[in-house]
Length: 131
Image (cartoon, rainbow, N blue to C red; front, top):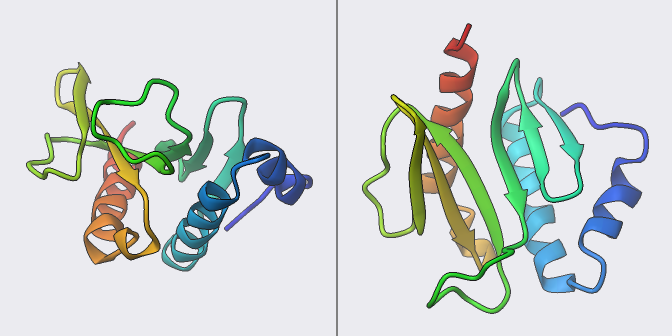
C-alpha cells in the first residue's frame, strides 16, 4: 500500500493517548495492506482514508458514541452500493441514491475478520466502478 512520507508519525499522532485503538488500527492496516497492495492511505484530521481511484474506506475514532458502543473502538467506514443487513453496521446512511455509507465499530482484533474484509473488497470494487 502506498503511504505518504510521514505516515508512521502521523498515525502515532492521530492515536495519541489511545494505545488500544492504535493496536486495532495497526491490525486493520496490515490486513488491508495485504488485500489492497495498490491502494493508498492518507492520515487526515478526523480519519485515516483509504483510496483506490476514489475513497473506499476510512478508519476513525468515534466522535459521538452511539449508545451501546464499546468504550475503546475504531470505526471502520465503508461505502457500498447497497445497505448492509448486518448488526455489525451500527450506522447506515444513503447520502446519494445507490451509495450507502456504513460505520462499523471494531473493538477487538477478532472483528477484523473475513466478513469485514469482504465488505472492504466490495467497497473497493464499488469505488473503482465509479466514473
